[in-house]
Image (cartoon, rainbow, N blue to C red; front, side, top):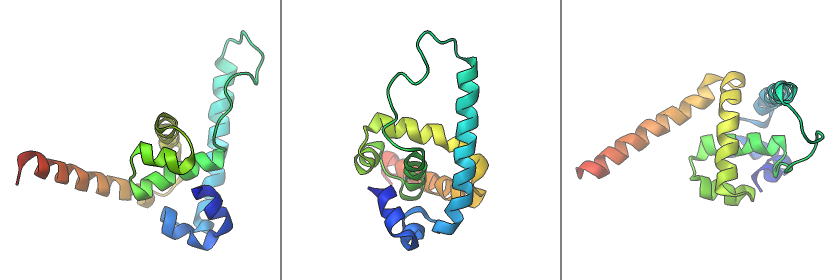
Length: 134
């Protein structure tokens, strides 16, 4: 799994995620803190019928979820492939990615997320070329 690989070989993090392991640590902690704040706010607004702690447990740890999102930003994989790499369904990969993107936009430097927009514009160009038959 990607997260385990990064934990075992932190010197290879830049190749996998586009940033070094050291650059990952501080924003990672901020992202986890922001996640806890969002979770606490949602819990305070809920009207509970069942006791807290019930329901489906998360398949990935918070660190694994962040890693999934960063890995997808770097590699631009389909959610099917991303789910296989992280041993979750494509729906879980999609939901995880879209949950963490707003948090990571606030926490990580814009230069990291800039790569996605460049790749997306390239993808749009390629799709136009294929559609129009140039």
